Image 1: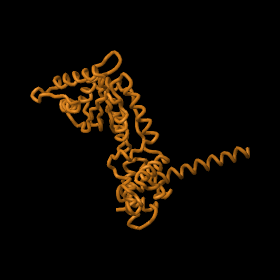
Image 2 (image 1 turned 90 degrees about the vertical axis):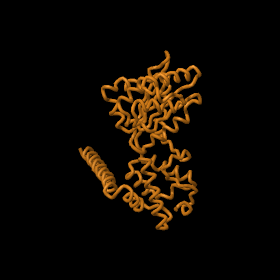
Image 3 (image 1 turned 180 degrees about the vertical axis):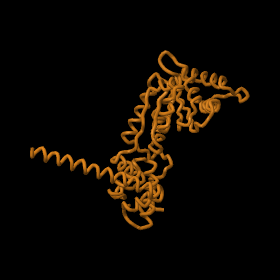
Image 4 (image 1 turned 60 degrees about the vertical axis):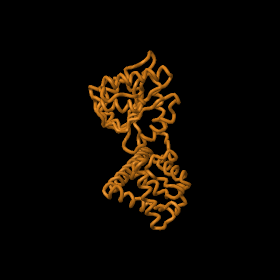
Length: 303
């Protein structure tokens, strides 16, 4: 509705995973570097965690683009599976033919191990990526660990990438999963965008859609950081709604008060007030500390 009004040729803040709008902040690049390094090591697992909407899927998509061409990737998007169902899904992803009447943990495991050995002989790397891995049951994670037992003198024949929310870190601290935890060669926890990164993120998405960051006032950009906490998915939702409200008011630039109104519509008044209150409290504290330091300096000079 607002695209032609702001001179945009596409919706810059759609939450659909359009690769054209992929923004790799320094934090996302660092996370990607950790994963790539971990996959090159001899261990079987690498792990990426982060809060909802911080861009874990963005990093995983970029990782898949940068894997060597001689890599076969199996992707698990629904980890709420039993151990038997998980092994069956891995077989499907790796193109392994099997007979349903023979389905058992041992049967599927033997089929997968044979495929891993075959890939290795043909010079093909095998990578399994599990999204939303915090939902995996401990016994399913243990089954994954057993799959990584097949190895040469130099490396594991199956590398596993676990992607999940912070609860995944707690899950792997369980005593029965300590062997798996010891095999993780690289871990990275993805934090939200910083204040400067939020401005760059919004500017990047607008530029791809033939727009300009000046559509949002500087005060609005600041409010976007304070209210969203730097979570990309939330930034998209609020910026899209704010552009709609600005269009209905026929204003040339998204003002701060309309961005706040958009946030209240989506997040709720109480959430917005709470987040703005935290910023105000922090500001008062910073002023108090600065004043205290200045007073100490004056006292030292007088002394």
